[in-house]
Image 1: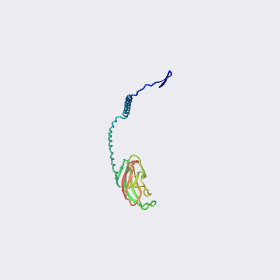
Image 2 (image 1 turned 90 degrees about the vertical axis):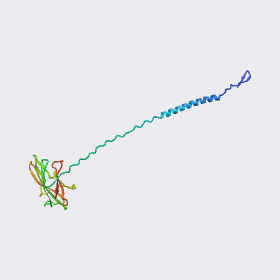
Image 3 (image 1 turned 45 degrees about the vertical axis):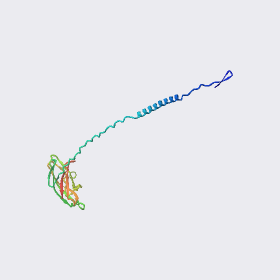
Image 4 (image 1 turned 180 degrees about the horizontal axis):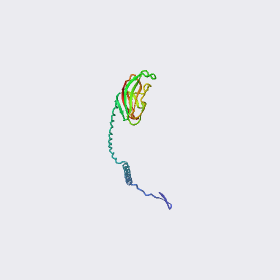
Length: 206
């Protein structure tokens, strides 16, 4: 540096500052280790916080299903079929007898269709109860063949039906008439003594 002093020019030298490379290197290495330790600590903390001990998987034991008992259906007793000529007492109310079975080609007022015939079933009934009882051939008697085909009644004027009210001890005779195929000869006659009850059955052969 040049300085003027009392007209003189004097040269002033700046003090020399020596740089110690070894000192700077030591300081740099010191900070490098500190930085590395901070990084290692941070990484270790982050990894550790994300690692959780695995929870043991609970063992699932299936619950055995209780075996339900299978209900065995009770076989129903086969229906009893009675025969023509048997005298039956039913529910302490009726005494019923199928007395005869025959066929007819009709009368002057009614003829069966071609291939058909009239099946006539003679009935005797007696009221054995102590109260008056009503007979209805239309609602109490049914006829069907062995395959289940049902035949409606076809009354003939020459064969009165068993209908009416019977006093205690009174008797009634009548004929049930049905138009049936001439080729079928086996039928089942049913009598229903009370509403919603079980019918009494007869095997009918013409």
